[in-house]
Length: 377
Image (tube, rainbow, N blue to C red):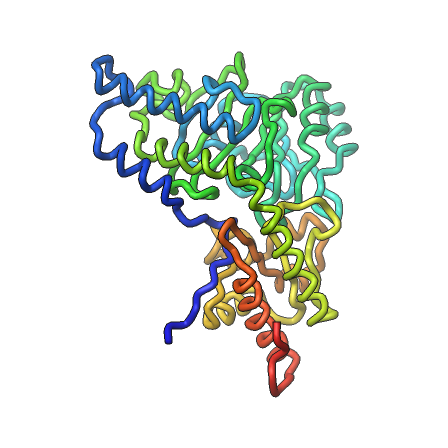
C-alpha cells in the first residue's frame, strides 16, 4: 500500500487550482499581445483588464486601474520599496527577506514578544526625522501567522506624510481584506500562495503615487513595468483570486483544525509551545517549538513519515541559520532552533491533522527516549 502523503506547507505554496489551470490553458490557446491594437490584441487586453478587477476584488476596495502585474511577490516588494525613491525606508523586524533586503540601510521597526509591531516605537521613529519616508509592514507573517495592526500603522504613516506599503502575500485569500479602506498606498499580492501559478504577482499602487519602474523599455502596465504581460499567468492568477475570494469562509473550518492541532500538541508535550499564540493570527498557521530537537531534523523525520512541513520560511530552505522573525520576537535561541511551521489550506482535513499528530508524537517520544506504543491522535 502506498504511503499517504500529507501536505502542510501551504504558506510556502498552494496547489494549483483547477480553475487556474483551465484559465491558463485557454489563454495559451489564444494569440494576442495586449499592447497590439488589432482585434486579437484587444481581446488579450480585455482579459488582462478583467484580471485586474478580480485581483482588486480579492484585496478589497482597490481601484483595478491601480493593479500592476509583476513576476511575483519579491518583485512587487522591490518595486514598492525602491520605486518611490523615499529618503527613509522603515521596515518591521519580522518582514520577509524580499522586503528586508530590498533597500540597504533600511531602519527597523521593533516588534513585541508576540511579533506585533510596537506602534509607539514607529511613532517615535517617524517623529525623529522629517525626511520623506516609506513604511513597510506585512499584513500577516509567513512564519508565525501573526496579523499586524495595519490600519493603525497606515494612520501613523499618514500622520507623518509617509508612504505605507503592505505585503499582503500571506493574508490574501485567507482573510477578508480591505486594502483600500485601511489606506495602504502600496499592496503586494502573489498568485501561488492562493492557488495560482508561481512567477506571477501584483502590486497595487494608489492613484497619484509616482513610481519609478525596475524595468524600462516599454510602456506596459502604465509605464510601471516594462515587458509584454504574461497573459496566461495573469489569467491563472485572476481565476485563482476569484475562487479564493469566494471561499474565504472555508478558512473558519481550517482554523478549527489548526486549533485542534495546537490543543493536541500541548496535551502531548508540556514543554512544547506555539509561537505567537497570544496574538491574532492567520487561521491556518502554527509555529510549533519542540525543545531539544533541531527544526531541520524534525522536517526530515516528518517527511520520512509522509508529512511535509517547513522550518521557518520555505524560500530560505538550504540556508542554515536562526529565524530573524523569532529572534526579533525575543524567542530563546534553543526554542527558535527547534521551531517548525505547520500551515494548512482549503483542502486540509481532520485526517491530515491526525496523521501529523501521530508522526509528531512518535518523533517527540523518540526524542524523550520513550519506547512502546504511540499515543493515538
